[in-house]
Length: 413
Image (cartoon, rainbow, N blue to C red; front, side, top):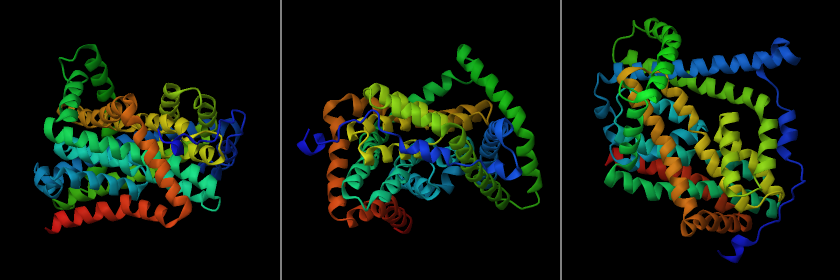
């Protein structure tokens, strides 16, 4: 590794975690109703449960709406994205726009259950992985006035960018040639759904049946309320309602879990992140599952990196763990369906999980590949610290200009 990569601020194990003070200042949206103390705590958890219920219902509505809108011709509707590079860019733009990979993956699971071809689903989910890194990159811009803090914070943010970009560079060609993710996710979904998958399939099917039975009444109500609208507009309106619900619900769940869990998550992060790569990956996974947002998880780490509490090489595995932890949302969303739809929805969720697991094993497991994101982030942060315009070029180019240009060129030409 180059000397610039190795030149890190030493760990300050007893340094206060900036995120803890900010966590204390978080307020629950339910406080406006006069709730406080234990009553507020219980209400917050109940609201999270209701939010998850609405999330699963919304995914169900999207699946039904997509079927109605396409009349079973989903491939024709998304013909413009049949190019995997365009599908990838759709995932990037959608996630960058919503600032939530959980939203993109949940919507994609619903679209997959409604008939969206897996060859489009796979690169879209890869794109979601890239788009989600925008949030922590933007957080690092808050340190722009302090050159050294900005250099450390921006490198900690963009190491996530470089890791996910490298993962796509490796696995998108493998997917196009061998169908690696589609085949392995298909096998895994077959083992966890249907009648011949053994105990695991029975458990998953049972969970799916219960969840579907609970959420179907509301989904049917939303469908019947909009039934007067002629097709295909009825289906399009259902998709819009589902996406709107997901956007609202993900936002509310995120706010509630920040109030409930960010203080604890910050303690997990601060205690475990400096103990080694495997512990860093595990803590990234745990914290992300706790707060249901990889953007929140990685953003918690940026102030720690900027202040010098942790080095880039310690933050790096933590962000990889966040990639894996965020896949839980798509798995939860997949339980909105039963039967053949359940198998397809689970396959889409497993694509997201397996992509991040494979990327971790290959990139972080092989030393020559492991150092590439570190060196890329260190190099880019050095440029951006000297000339702030490079930070703007990176953000606008990778997350906005390049994806939109490729989509536009493909659709027009």
